[in-house]
Length: 218
Image (cartoon, rainbow, N blue to C red):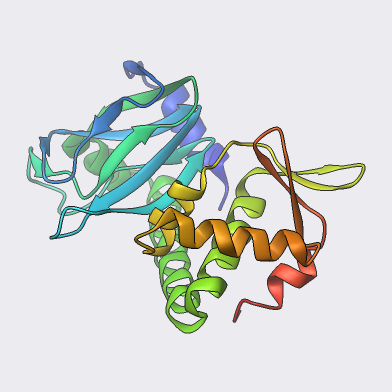
């Protein structure tokens, strides 16, 4: 998926830019909003709240990406599908009138293709992650999430692959549907004992990626 199509579209319009600070929310699940948002810079996290009030994390997102364009093309106000929380010190997002954005998409073949590809990729990603979470058990789910963190934030360093972003065990629990962070603590310790990971300055350092992948059904 070629982000230059989206970037060219944004560059050709004077969209307002919203700046939010760390731990603040851009939208809440179910809150009516007339805008679509595109992440310009920073890191955000999407999540939903279960019926019993527990938070379930969906994804970390960084770099240029549409983060809230959903539902029909004509309703001016829609219910936000998930919570969007800022995870970097600050994040900047383009704010687009969603109805006008849909009109522009329908009149621009390249942008239309981009949006279709975006939704196709997001759907495949969601299906694959759900499969991995359901079929691998809790330990496999934690390994799946660490692998996804590697895919999003991994930076090769001299002695391994550094996940260059601080993620707490509690957040990992919320990604995996595990109610207790202490359960994640035990599984992280198991991975450390096996030599798969280390913790450096609160960040994961992957020492053996293949060992982590052995616990994931791809």
